[in-house]
Image 1 (spheres, rainbow, N blue to C red):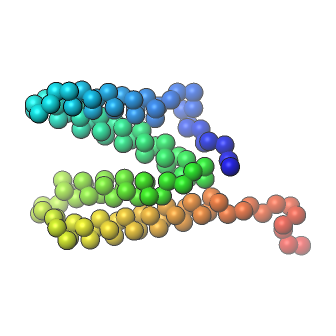
Image 2 (cartoon, rainbow, N blue to C red):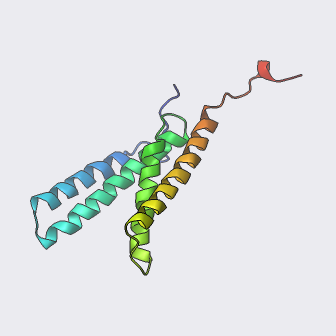
Image 3 (cartoon, rainbow, N blue to C red):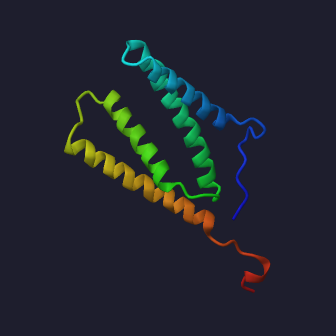
Length: 131
């Protein structure tokens, strides 16, 4: 197995700090209960945690260290779904929303799987080259 890929900001554990800070913010939101003031820290914490997880899994996936096809495809699909709820001038609910999500998940998963297979392809060495 290859070595774990390092982030471009390597000595700083940015993804890990984002995940920890997000968990703290979500906990604050949960402790506040059903109050209106609970929504902002919970949603912000969830988003920061998701960004940290996405960065780490994408880095590992595209470097060929560990396969995260399903998780990354789900996160991309959830982001597309959330964006469609906010941007579209009509409500996309029921079978239409499920169909859009399935198409997005299938396409994203296929693209991520193709990129994974490229990282796993054996590279040509001096002895393997045709003469």
